[in-house]
Image (cartoon, rainbow, N blue to C red; front, top):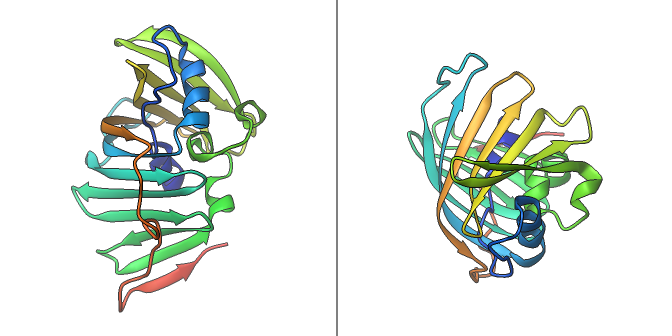
Length: 208
């Protein structure tokens, strides 16, 4: 579940094809179609079912290249790196000197990352509903059609053609809030930008 929650925020960026009058769901569809790469900054916090903070807030950098390649780098309050090369997903924890490796299909599945990185029909895996305006943002809700997705729904807020916030409600009633800034659409990444090689002396654990 931790992987799915972290990946939820990757890759949000503006798309120049949108108009200011577009609904949030229309903006998401255009984003999936038109934004092939993106990078920016994030901040993240989680509240439990009673509204109490769970763990320390996190912040860092993200980048993605469609389909399925991304990098999620936590910088504060500790270092952690999640990288996908399109085939495998690696979670590197420097404090534990350990890398967990799993297949991208098994990791992403119907997680929110499938909305952001996928190239297929969104409505095939998610029910999309516009939620109107709240906190100065235009919102949509994506609800997974599969009951075992690991989360109840994810809300995405847009402003000025840019996705600005993500709110993910998991199956335990916890809500993860992720804010995005310094968004850049369609930057050009060097070849191998999303490759990962475990540092010397680090254990690699393969997961099914």
